Length: 395
Image 1 (cartoon, rainbow, N blue to C red):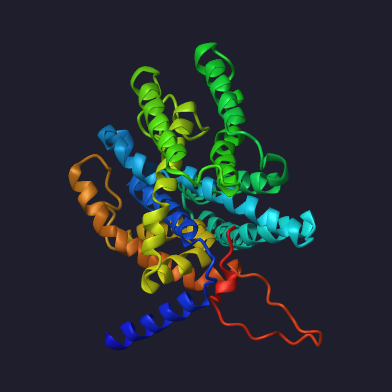
Image 2 (spheres, one colour; image 1 turned 120 degrees about the horizontal axis):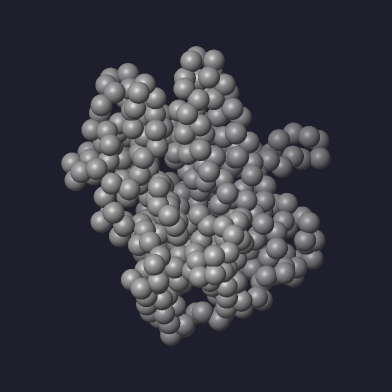
């Protein structure tokens, strides 16, 4: 045990020493917290129940609506888009100053996003085919694929906004927020078509993304704008939920008439503004915490594998659920209907098991997140330490 701690301490010191002195570590900390929120949120509000020999997706929020405040803590996508806009704006400005062409810049950024996706798609295509050939129910296979692939919409939207950075970098966040409001009025107030809501998939996430770009320009570095975002966003979300008819949950609930997330609503955007304000206020404490080498090393290594963690966390949960069927088809917190406080307690006990399964997925697939190895003129691969600090990308 002492040997492991000594090795970890040595690694943390190396990571800390390799980090540029001018790096804003609070940005990496915010991204890590956002990814962690998404992972824990999915593990806690998504459940697979054993029904009639198959697996069905069930949300605890459908059975226990009083758990809605959990979604306020763990629905952290606005923070991820805030950080993404901030880093993309800074990165593009830096690339232009160095004379890097837009095409080279965007290929580098999008490559980090999409290289790991291929492994997920290929593996699950093989798994789905094997399950169907083995006699699994079509509904079971469809449920599993939906859980794996549905989060990929996030990557598509994020990639589109990243590619559009030169166009949106100076866009006032008020404009996409007004688009979201207009779409909601049309949908809910004037009886407009449901498909118009999908405009908000771009407009809704453009709000925190453009806030991040404004932060990169120095517009949000003071406390007052952050406090206004936090207070105004929280008040707006409360008004919309209490008197505007919007659901309290900030994630989708199966069977609910309206989802705040799919597509984003004005309530989700207001809530996201509050999250962004809180994130900006937390920068100081996070920066101080990141001065500790061991704390910073955890965040840095998390950022090195952010996409791997995001893409494989659902696979980890489903693998544990499927393997659990070999023991019993009624394991509490794993296969049972999430309708009691006992289910919550049991589910919390499964989280370390999910994390262990995710660690296995990370070990198998994190290499796909690495950039291709540069080669010397002779074609000989250049030696490179895995996990080099130069690999920490703001993708």
